[in-house]
Length: 284
Image 1 (cartoon, rainbow, N blue to C red):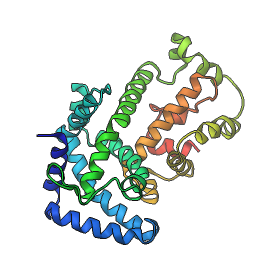
Image 2 (cartoon, one colour):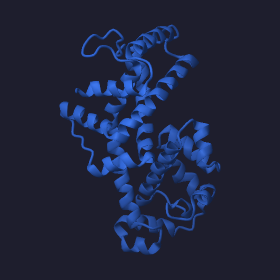
Image 3 (cartoon, rainbow, N blue to C red):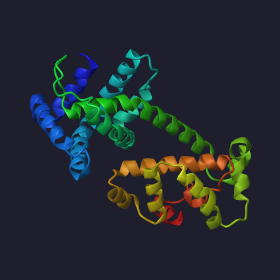
């Protein structure tokens, strides 16, 4: 079975109504939304509904391994290097948090280009006659997410391995820094500075934060204000996994900055220091 047919089949199995009905309904909705230029609250509601339909399909495909297999097949057909190791397969099948971390990023990236590509440029065609006929917009969206999976997964896997190596070596102690002067020398040197934490955080910390994506900035700003993860997720309309992912990536950016001598990381931000709830408010 061709990979594109597997995508359509996964969507068909995940939705209750038949494909032809969905295509007709999507075409009618698109014509309505086009009257307002695919903007406004009606379009946002349509997009939210589309994502809510695609999300469980994507999670299921990532859990059973079909999503990475299709992504690798498409990359092979186009001569693009991409490989998901057996260990990563096993992790994605067993760990719902890892799946959500990847899928949140995938969906956000596809969402930013969906309006222009699918609707304004007319890439989605409800009158397509080839193969098994036209696909509904949910199938189109899922297909775009599978294509985007390569970029997001590669970055996620590399960051996870780098993060694991870093924290396997560094436990926040001066002894470890002395034992690894090349890697942690700048961190140790910065920790000797008598400059108050507030002054440090008002300069280098904010510089590093401004370099992050807008959504990460919003998450970290709420952390600094004392909000817990559940409150941040509700306020920003994210999953808890997405909040954790943003915090993890920012923590990595801080450690990168520490190795470069740009910032001293206060003890509260060390991943192994204390409990999370106590560290969150202390980090401010």
